[in-house]
Amino acid sequence: IARAILGRPRLVLADEPTGNPDPRMAEAVMDLLAGLNASGSTVVVVTHDVAVAARTDRRLHMVDGALAELGGGAASPLRAGWNR
Image 1 (tube, helix red, strand yellow):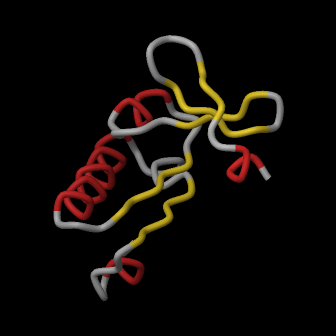
Image 2 (spheres, one colour):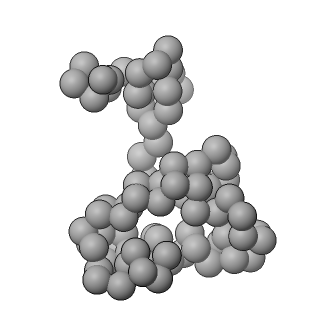
């Protein structure tokens, strides 16, 4: 994580960043990513952890092989160009 954020990137892609750490360290990782986002970086987190997903501003998931956004209960498919 340190190498990934050293240059203050505009985009951070985090694949299961809380998958292996203990709960306390996982919370610290999410706090770090939230701080990066607050300072202007776009942070994309891939996770299976519902608690981690709940900390994000926007949640996407797969529906029948296509990305869909969660909002207002039912999933709504994204623009067709995003589904490829």
